[in-house]
Length: 201
Image (cartoon, rainbow, N blue to C red; front, side, top):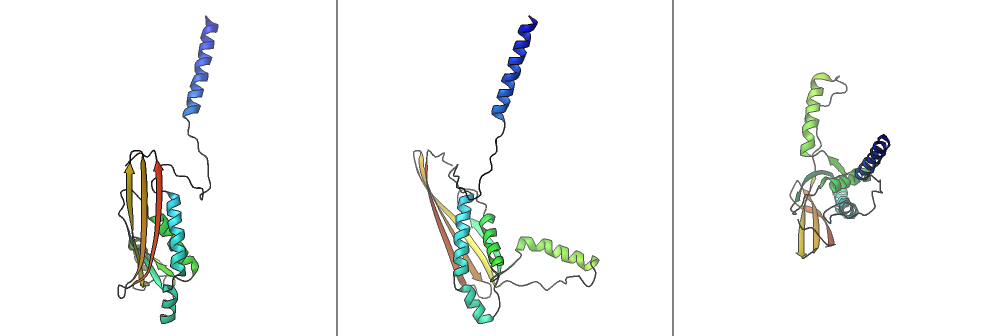
C-alpha cells in the first residue's frame, strides 16, 4: 500500500512538473531588423520603414541648403504634433525620435526641446538660479528659437471581407516655417498589408 502511494505521488509530481514546464514563459531574442508580423496591425517594422524613408528624404531635400545659403547658419527644428487619425493605437514617438536623432547627428539641422520637454528644463534653470554657482548658472531668456516645426498625420484605410483585410497606412510629415507658415518640406510614406484569416478590430 505504501509503495502504491509513493508511485502515485511520484507520478503526480512528474505530471505537475510537466504542466508547469508547458505553462512557463518562453523568451527568444531576435534581431531588431527581423520582420515579424503577428497581428497585422502597425508594428516596429512599419515604424522603421517610415523613419528610414523620412530620414533619407528630409536630409536630401533642398530646404537645408536653401536655408544655409540665405542665412549662413544651421536651421533649427522643433517637433510639433503628429496626429494619429487611424483606427488603431500607433506610437508615433518611435519614428519621430529616429528622425530627430538623424537631424542632430547629421550636423546639418539643430533640434530644440519640444513643448512637453521644455517645462522640465525651465524648472531646472529656475532651480539653478537659486542654487548653482554663478559661473555655471544658465540664465533665463536665452533659449534658441526654432525656425521650423515638424508636423504630421497618420491615416489608415481598411478594406475587409470575410477573413481577409487590406490595411493601408499613409504617414505625411511637413516642415513649416514659424516665421511665415511656408511649408519647406513634405515627406510621405505609404504601407499596405494583405492579412489573411484576420481578426477584425
